[in-house]
Length: 89
Image 1 (tube, rainbow, N blue to C red):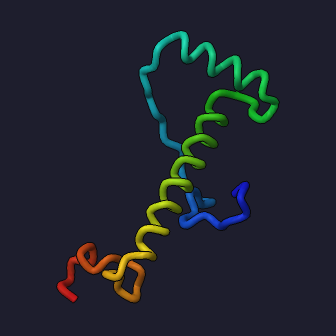
Image 2 (spheres, rainbow, N blue to C red):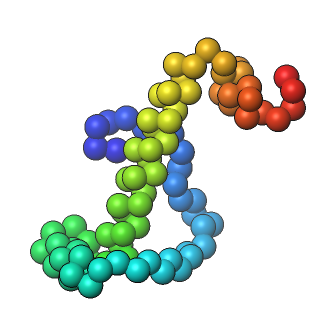
């Protein structure tokens, strides 16, 4: 990650299979996105850019969630909130 912190979860594994995603967005937004992808020099295509954006969002969201969990006093030693364990312990 850019800030030097480690992601909370590995978003992808070597054995992951690709899945298709269909999203409806305004035509103008897609045109602007494609222009940004083409001029960024970071991505070779739209899919690559979208995968990267989703990956960064997930890592950011899960890192924020993990920080919140760590500050909670109701954490089980396993790192899972006791109310989420479902085993009554």
